[in-house]
Amino acid sequence: MKTTLTVFFKEVKENLRDRRALMSALIVGPLLGPAIFIMLMNVVLTRELNKADRPVKVPVIGAQYAPNLIEALKQQGLLPQPGVADPETAVRNRDADVVVRIPKSFGEAWRKGETSQVELIYDSSQSDTGGTIGRVKGMLENYGRRQGAMRLVARGLSPAMMAPVAIDERDQSTPQSRAGLMFGMLPYFFVLTVFMGGMYLAIDLTAGERERQSMEPLFANPVPRWKILLGKLGAICTFSLLSLLICVTAFSFCGKVIPIERLGMKMDLGISFAVQVLLMMLPLVLLLACLQTLVSAFAKSYREAQTYQSILMMVPIFPSILLSVTPMKIADWMFNVPLLGQQVGIMKLLRGEGVGSMQMAHCVVIGLAVAFVAMIMTGWVYRSERLAVSA
Image 1 (tube, rainbow, N blue to C red):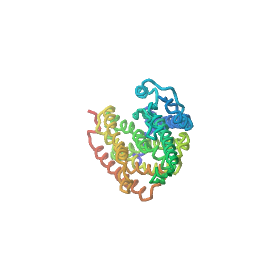
Image 2: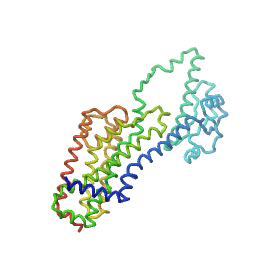
Image 3: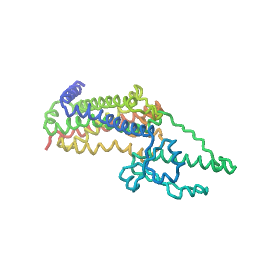
Image 4: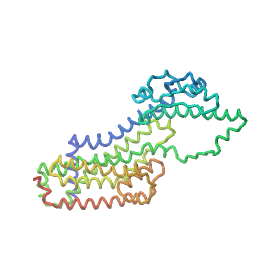
């Protein structure tokens, strides 16, 4: 134990002096994700909410053919703008989000009681125009429903004939579960933070020492190599865990900075959430530290180890991709799979559903068991004499 602690404190002290390791573990890794997430969500939500609060400016071609329609749209918050010569080009060039075109035949068809056509010209591939398009569509549909009901009343018929089936919507979502959908990328950010927090240490403590030829004199000491490995893994886990703690703390401010209340959402990222996330992620901290050390042991230089680590970094993405392209009902067996268990567990916490004690136990115990197997594999590689030399 004394040997392990000596190696642990030595590696921690040396890496605290390494600006590259500190930048990766304590600044870039844990803070870059929350900063980008908060900035993007604030910009997008503020823009969409401002659009929803302000009247919508829409170029209207042929407004003179339907004055009653235009007046009704004005009352719903539409500000008609002068028409454009080429609406298709204007929409493609983003000069207008949507263009309304009313044909000359609108008034004649209206007087005959026939369906009057209104063209809505837009580009659905423009992601930032969806809110405006939806609002204009809603305005036109509301006007159409009101006028259709008035036509039935004028003929002595009940407007209820237009709706033979009444839909009574009962949304079972809660403000927190809706917010969980928006914050669905948090589990991946947490896993990536753990990976980044220990990556440079894992490379430096194995491939780096091998390249500097300092591994051979270290192994020449009359101490078991597994004790040296435990000291190095302890240093990597310490930096990874500290990085995760900073990241979780940073994300706890998201609910206060992002205006989710205006969207009818609620987010609780307090102490209870942080403790449960740290508990679920604890096995992953050890597992990733072992895998990073194992991969670095096969590299003869620092640069080669970086290449291997970039490939290993793709592994945490798989659960996120799996759940995004094939949405599945959360089942108990998922908590038995490392990475996937953390993903679904954190998602349940974000939705306010909570993680059961058995689910938490399976996630932690099985994760530690898999990490222990990875540690044994890494220890077996550390027994090789080839690890001590760089050539």
